[in-house]
Image (cartoon, rainbow, N blue to C red; front, side):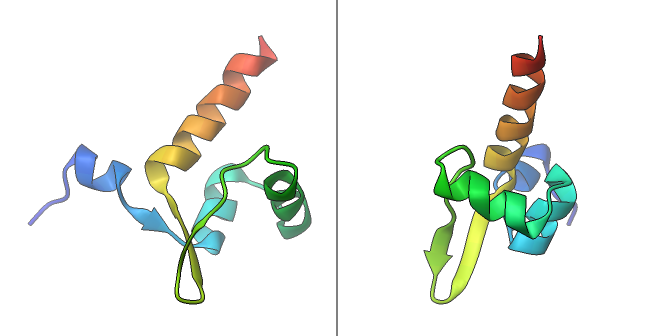
Length: 67
């Protein structure tokens, strides 16, 4: 069964996927989280997860701030 756009938006991403989407390096990524400038992950056990929607919204906000 094909995923809908809503399914993709609510997809949980692990750190490597977030880094790929944002084009950030580990150091900068964790620096932004620590400074409260990037959404904190949801922890499930030892796994950190971010919703794709949240990451895409953060990227869009960065583009808006450039103007």
